[in-house]
Length: 204
Image (tube, rainbow, N blue to C red; front, side, top):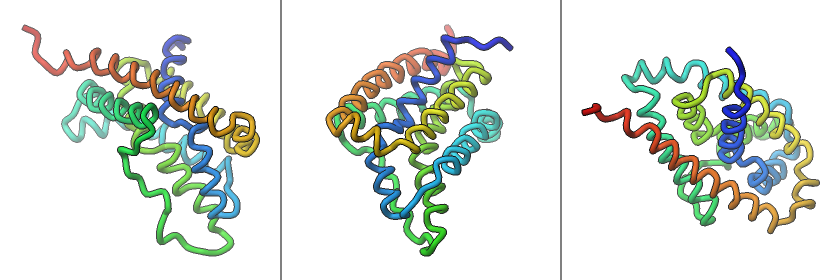
């Protein structure tokens, strides 16, 4: 199967906007402050494993539940729509527990925090998983895989250079970047919805 640069680019941008690793820098700093230390490689590998698992097994799971990719793409487009609204309007619509209550305390806390909540749900959360499954309606699996790998490169670089990026962009820069990708994601969610909603109704 030949790789399609256009499909890879589209999938990369969608996943980059949903993961929003740059906009998540303040949360990453908060997690690191609680844990004392985080492991970028560990967080990235766990996130990658979660995404790849749903990329290759997601359709099997959907079939088991009696669903199809187009139905999930429509549902996913709605999730992306609300994520985009969060990014653009600065409101909180999805309530995810990132405090990780009940985690053990001690010298290995930073190892646990690198997985929960950093790898899941901050990086490979519900929005990311939904997006990967939704993209399967329009983009070949191989192209999505490449896009995921490229995003993981960005993630590990951001995790390694979090403090420098925050100083470089500043608070205003992070906000502007988040809103810009929110607008892109909003447009993509509308297109994803329009491209799949017709498949749910019999053609007359």
